[in-house]
Structure formats: structure tokens, C-alpha cells
Length: 114
Image (cartoon, rainbow, N blue to C red):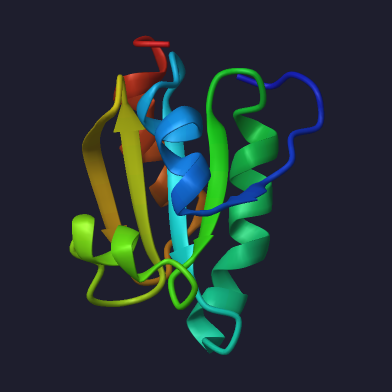
């Protein structure tokens, strides 16, 4: 699963369709807020996930406060919330903090779909 050093990209409502819905690769989108301590805790975990899956899966963040329309569309009630999209459809969800291993375990069934 490892390739080049991956980076996490911050996106917003205007980029969401192109970057997530129309992507031909599995995508993790993390809905975060800068003031949230659990979001601060999960951020380095997301960096590790992005690096472990570079080339196979892309990881994005969305500021939940700045993008309320996305939050309503995807029923984000708590942050952090991570959504896994495959072929534009939500296929997995993690609410709250999670370990790198837990995130990778949720994603593993979809990596072959890339």
C-alpha cells in the first residue's frame, strides 16, 4: 500500500464533488474543527493513514464549521467524523477518534476497488 509521501488536502464545498464524488480512488474525508481537542488528537493519525495508503487512497479534511452544507448533507453530528467514499458513495463511517489500525481495517475491503 505504500508509495510516495502522501499529504492530506483541505477541501471545501466547492471542491467536494470533483475531489471526492468523482474520484476513481477510495477517499477518506475527515470532518474536523480546529477548536476540537479530539480533532487535534486524530490529525497525526490521519497523517499516518495517508502515508500508509499513498497512491491507493486519498485523504481530505473538511472544516465542519466552514462547510455546514456538507455537514448537513452527510449528517455530521459529531466531530471528528471520517467518511470513506468509493465510487462517489459513502461506504464506511467512523465517529470520534480512532487508531491508524482501526481506520486501515475499515478501509481494507475497498482498496481493491481502486
